[in-house]
Length: 213
Image (cartoon, rainbow, N blue to C red; front, top):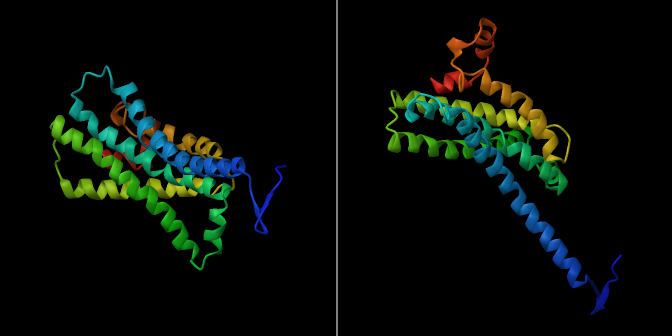
């Protein structure tokens, strides 16, 4: 244990201890942002490219699938990253002890993923419209579908983040057991009409086909 330096009747930590604390604080600020970008942007993008490259289809027709998986991963990735880290640094305990209702706390946590996913999903939408001339058949329906899908998956992320752990990986591993199968039964990579009957019935419970339409 480091010895404390007495200065003016006060205990002062050595400079290396203070620097270590500043470094850990910096890591705590940078780590969530890196996790957000990895799970919310790069992971769905590279997964989409892995299945889309080589398909005999115009790029513009693949944009709805990209928007769908972007909404899925970006909306459900904020809470499973932020809440375990908040537990680790004890800021989540302050929220629980604050004079706010549990409903407000859950809504606020979900709102972050909801807004983040809508902002990220606008990027492939703009690329599809501007670069690949992807037509928007019904703009109001598109907006409603994106908002409802983002809200659905944001609350899904909050639900899994309720698992009492300080480890982000534990929450993400459980969440991916739902997200990854959800992609393959939703017509993003395989048309629903080409699935067996049981696959088509399972696809009815997924919000992704509705958002893609």
